Length: 560
Image (cartoon, rainbow, N blue to C red; front, side):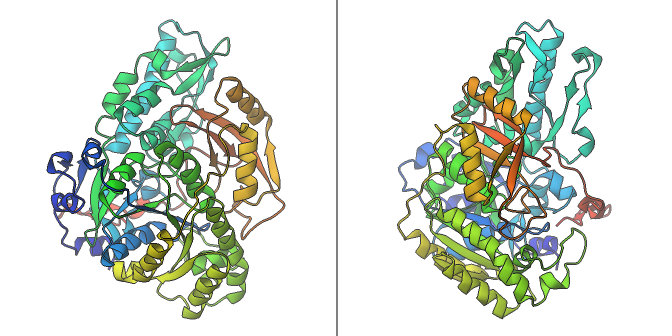
């Protein structure tokens, strides 16, 4: 059965029953049909005296281009915890239309570890991503309208930072020339999930905080070099109106009825890669355990979770799960090349102890990355159908030797929550251990030191090379008073380094920084490595080629 067929074979609970299982009051639930709802942030006031649940982060090693099941592991773990009698919710990001129609397909899990309604979540869902794009582009329109009508703020047209946003991958829009009304100035698009509005929505603690953050967005500089923020353009109220419903977290369920909050979708490689602070805040007051996922590996989403999101939310994780697969470990060990749309080479799918042993160095670094933040680590060995039991057990045992408090083989894809019970038991034990969570760097450090610390500690780099433009932008950021913001690194997810071709645990490399972006509304600066694009492109054979609508039944086909 396909993922879509499996999802359609399940009889779900009503969304009101899912909310009731968390103790969310009916007045705080705004249904969007029978299977999805928004939850009012006002619910936090009703549950503020509840104890805070255990907070579990799911991250991973560097993946193949196909992904290694971090979302399915998060869903399976949440279901497994519920099977052990722990009231659990999972919090995830909303899938992006870019990957849905581009490379990886949907982001609702797979097999018996899915959230539903699968088609709705992967496509328009409750419209949050569209609201983000509309708000982003409204600010763009106000900015250019201000220039057209006399430019009373004296904005320097050559120092405008604010792009436009689009919700699908389109490389042709990375660089554009705007019309005569704007003086034919240069412009560009970013994908919606890289928009500062998306990052801001994800990190806001409530509507008032969102409005304040939106007002701080830096759109450019005056001709004398002073910052120009969105509040000066008089449109912050309008942006907030467009986002008034998007600020409410979305509630759905897994195939086994476990509550799932799916809210906001910043990418893990070019944005901070985590779901909303608000969804976690509600879940942590309503559940005994909350499983949340960070985009890509510990070098990206998890590092940003620890050093950006946890600073914004004030919450502290109790444990982290690092997902590993045999095929990704073998890829990191030189066992073959994985390409989207092609069968995996025999070296990645069949027995290959040599590649597995070499590739384990990658997992070793990811375990160390989490431990550097003072959090107990559990390794989830995500098992595929034809994996060698001997190799799976080898990874499990070697993970414990490398410093994980435990490791478990998980078969959630084929067996649902039952296949994750051993992993769930290991996570419960890890959460009972004392943790001493710490950030990787101090906010007071200079920007260059923060970037160098991330590169050397998380990636294993020898050092960092700042390009001329990045040097200028870092100096400008510090001169403008943004030097104490945390750093969001934008780099490839396919390697610990900046170079997707450097596999395993590379050494002796230097990370090149080509650009620094100031995201004052979101509350961080983004250091962009060479080779990173904020607007992805479609592959030669996009997934969208096989997605269709059955004209007789009206059903979506080909979505995965």
